Image (cartoon, rainbow, N blue to C red; front, side):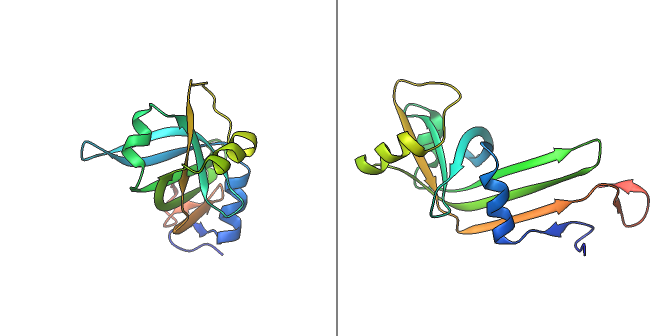
Length: 146
């Protein structure tokens, strides 16, 4: 059953499953008091945290370390007007433990662009929400697509 204007809310388990199947998402943070969105490579850690791999010298690291951020992943098929979106909101922290860093070098997300020194940022999943839209539904029965 679809509620909230035709969107179905995803369960936490469904959200985790969607996150597990993806490798690129977007970090939403604040830059100079304005919203900023950056695509990043990521993976879901064994404890459900989102792990982002980036350059130690990137602007992203200094902008999000210690801040509450949103992380979004989606998949949309415009031809069928269907898709889903998952948002993880939580505190972002730089992984500083050497053993944890070594583990993540082996099993963590892979960078698309190599950097001389790469770091990992962990986003704690304090709030996880997701929505799904199945194609063919229209807004308020008026024949307009969402």
